[in-house]
Length: 420
Image 1: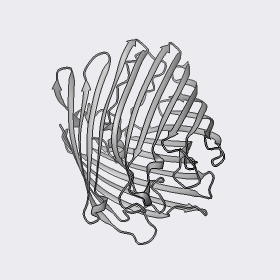
Image 2: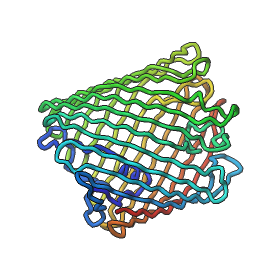
Image 3: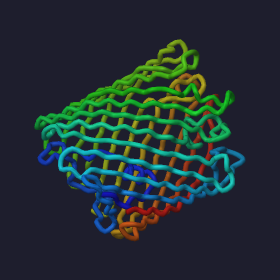
């Protein structure tokens, strides 16, 4: 079922993106569903009924945004503000089978600026995913997705300064995944393959994006052991191979891995989470220019349920990311964040989120700090119409001899969503 409860832009994406429903796991030692978060809670009066078509149900949806952005080029001086319209039609198709699953998704995003017409753009997504339930506790799932995307001017990879390119950077992203899960009472094994192919659109010799074209392959396995029905410990290993299309002095091709141990748990009726720590390393083919990057790796999330009407979340991560800075192949990204969702009324939801990030670049003198705050109010009129108001603040401070732009950006977004 589809809800009009996506009270923030990120939540909208999460709820409307295609996904394969997990196989039934009644009696599983790995269920973590004692608590239901504000965003997960069923709201029958505000769920789209969809249109039945044989063994499938179609969920059409369209969202219209009006945004005021006071710094559309993400620059420190000479700020330009503008009003931006976005129209986002979507169609999700989901199977109604008791076993196995097959889902499809198509969506678009037409972006129009009132004044700065060069920023006008279109995005779209086509995707399919499915799951085969082999036997109880064993399933194989896969997905394929093609996207035409626009890189935000505020992205850390957008260049120096952030508004340097004549138009927003456009790229195609093709993603495929294959996952196999086998559960043996207290032991669960998971194997996973992910492939990502990036194809950036060039904007002439002065703004060459071809050096960013690449393929990223990830492969890994995870073994979990349930020490109790509420807690499991695990070990995980993930390798990757990143191949850039262009060779030579700018080639950032590399191989890497992440080794980790962790635990997922539902400690009481108040707390659940997943915490992982480990070691990561990325080694570059052009070792004379790019030194390997390694260090402590971490990923974690906690959810606290002080009441049935309020959910508080904490997240954190430490990862190695790809760099576009000249002379640097990658950087270590450190992030912490907090969210709060509150159900003021059954059809009125309030949300807030804050993240702090620090990126330490390798090979060049650059360090970036980013603070992002957002607040959203959602009013669900009925199962077909939802109204949303979102404020977003982003601040980036970049320092060092190879620093990027430092800027502040404020956005106010009013949205109406229609679903059937």
